[in-house]
Image 1 (cartoon, rainbow, N blue to C red):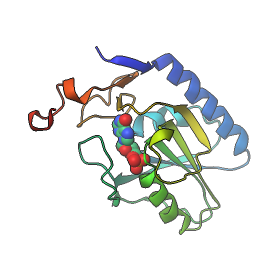
Image 2: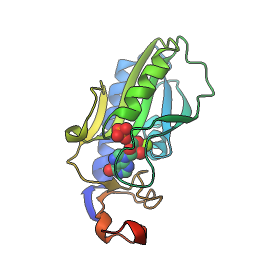
Image 3: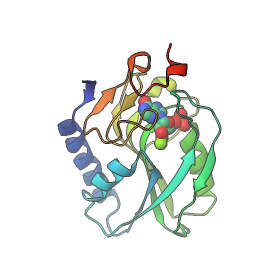
Amino acid sequence: MKDVLISQDQIREKVQELGESITADYQGKSPLLVGILRGAVVVLSDLMRTVDLPCDIDFMDISSYGTGTTSSGVVRILKDLEEDITGRHVLIVEDIIDSGLTLSYLRRALLSRDPASLEIVSMLSKPSRRKVELPVKYLGFEIPDEFVVGYGLDYAGAYRNLPDICIVDPDNDPATPETARG
Ligand code: IMP
Ligand code: MG
């Protein structure tokens, strides 16, 4: 079994709080929740049900990581939004912010489309790893510099379905490719 860092009960409580804040802050508006594939699918699906407002969802897929545990610094849009966000109140929903490079790039790209507002929601943040400053309006938990999985987060394509957020030890994990094991 993996070491649990944040339990499903803690997650549920936090998502509820985030949803209540968003509901209070966006009264009279219909925000568009934009999930970043694939990790944010789980938090997006929980979060949207705690937001008591008319809202819609959309998705983007962005690549800044290979299958390893460190940022490549390369950011590409693999799948763009279906919606025109001009004049919309947009909330980017992310699973985790590490260096911040991915979201910093994405934020600038979306701001250039003239949304009415643009804010970031992230379940997790590793502040010690940040390489660029990023305004995160709605944050679940700050965590130490550990590689975590579960609740949508993967390690080499594994563990997204774990209900808790758990710590991975890449040196002793069956999902680590033989060639990369140190
Ligand atoms: P950033 O551009 O360095 O902030 O990278 C953010 C992305 O890296 C997230 O959307 C995740 O896909 C991935 N990532 C960063 N840290 C972790 C982790 O601890 N576990 C799983 N994925 C992570
Ligand atoms: Mg991601």
